[in-house]
Length: 129
Image 1 (cartoon, rainbow, N blue to C red):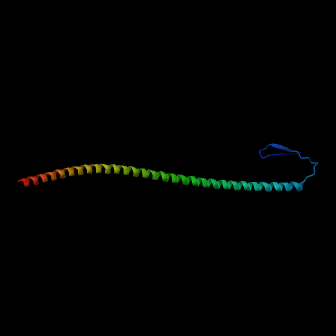
Image 2 (tube, rainbow, N blue to C red):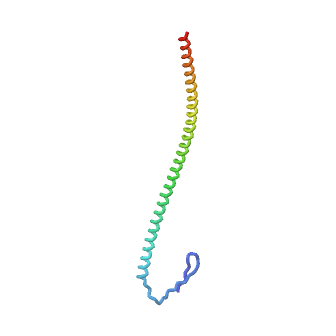
Image 3 (tube, rainbow, N blue to C red):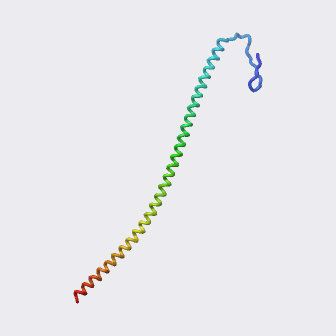
């Protein structure tokens, strides 16, 4: 039996029967195999961590790109809405102008008809004289 201290200061007792023969060859071989296994596991974990970091970076870049695209689309939508509003106002102005021109045209046609009637009346009056 041997006593020892852990890193945090607590003591522990190891119970190894000293009468058993030491298997130093087997122990060192199994320790070596365990160390190799742990190294391989650490490598796998590091690779998995690196892959996860790459995926995170790609996801962050994709999110950033999506936000930029959304901002551009929002800006484009606002521009198009402003153009639409302007076009509606211009259409209303054109409708009003067209309505006024149609009224003016109708008035001119009435005046023309009146003048033509007067002219015909004057011609008839001259012929009768």
